[in-house]
Length: 358
Image (tube, rainbow, N blue to C red; front, side, top):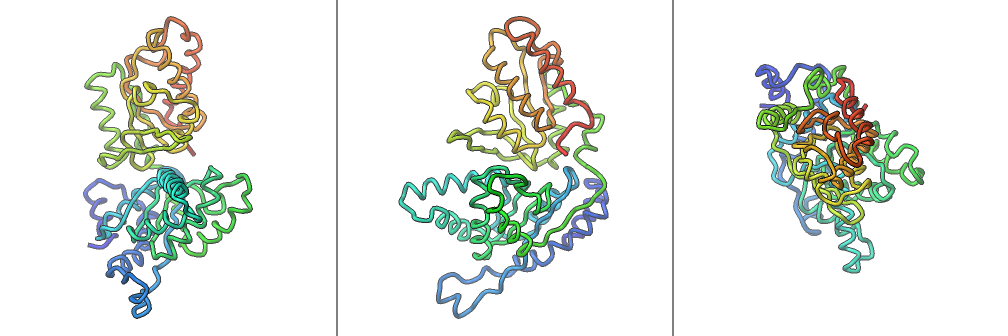
């Protein structure tokens, strides 16, 4: 069955809603699928001289508003490709891995720390699928152009989703002029396609839905699980590891910009504003399980929770939570209770149907 056939079968089964823009975009994956179904090119200098492999087709840069189905289409393509040497990864997490690999290479005395890291990716993969490409960090901006060039020269097929067109990446960033050649590379070596679906499916799924469950009992856990399954297509998710100033911040489950963690995962360890800002940047929906009653007994955890909600609020991250009580009754006495009224107000505002990243 081809990709369009799989899409139509899911529509007929009721697991997808028909969408003309999504269906039309599937044809863009066909040359990539045809290329990746061919045997891997020969390795070694002599083999490449004797039998020069055909160049890969242009990659695909699929962009559009939140919830339009970009990640779903990429997942459909990724699962359809009969290939072991493939990887699908959140762009932010991948760049963290690249930085860590470069740090190791420098410690080993490499003159060009990026070269061995890129060579390892080329050696292991033929297909690299990125979700939610965004460049906000200058350290990413300064290496991503060379990285992509090395991957493309090595024959790696790159597919990525983004909420922004290439020209808006790293907009107003420091030293952006140095980043512009990367934008030119994307437009030259990748097919850029705007997914112009009129429906925000993620927001539609949550529109009018309950997103705060109290008390945090078995019923709340089951309701949270149903929302997770609906937003991720029943994907169990994988841990999202963020490196912040050399520390690892781990969200236990993540898929397509949706993450799940407990209160204690997020606030039971010594995390600070930088860590919470990194989380807010990396996800669009954060599911927080088992928020307890807050008081002097868990004052440090309560302070971290306030900082976390401030970061999520400013980034307009959608919060779905199970808690011991409604926001206004989570912290009603003791030091910090008065200041928490602002947090409770924000939590209530964040439950609105229109809340979320644009």
